[in-house]
Length: 206
Image (cartoon, rainbow, N blue to C red; front, side, top):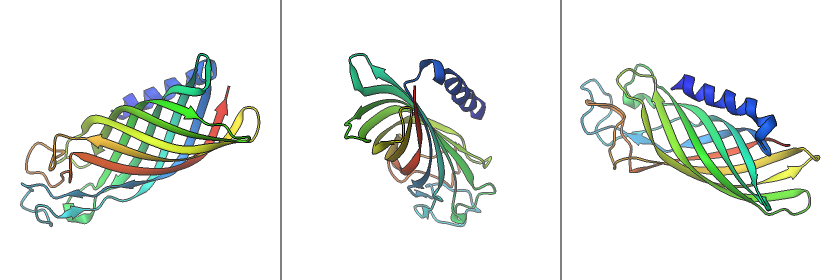
């Protein structure tokens, strides 16, 4: 999965100068909703079924490519890849507590230009990839979406500062859905798993 994501990022980055209207490179901070101890944890799990498992907040890295709609310069269609790493709390009793989370989305954006500022609203749909490192857990791929808002500040004709906040939602089968095949210490607290990002970076306009 890591190789597929890396290949996608590299290919889109190489294609950007020829195809993209906007290329955004963002660094931010991601807040992750807690998970919980599953209904049938392994016997040596420190916590009890239903106990909260906190996930660390950590850095998030985002690459976006956007294309203008013909006849509507303030509207964009594009694609976005955002990646972060987190760690499960010790209560899960995992040998390897780390987990990588990647979202790949198709996006739509609407700008509302005001002088040097370009406020915007955007939304996207695609897939979320959850890749825990511990061998007792399985990777999971689920439908996900996001909504975001923010603003660009124009520094020049082709260079802008970008500020945004993004809510990410990943949809699972139901409360207690686990990322393992049995005897699992980790489950989701609801059918919708939420993450929140606050990002800033540069946007290059071609």
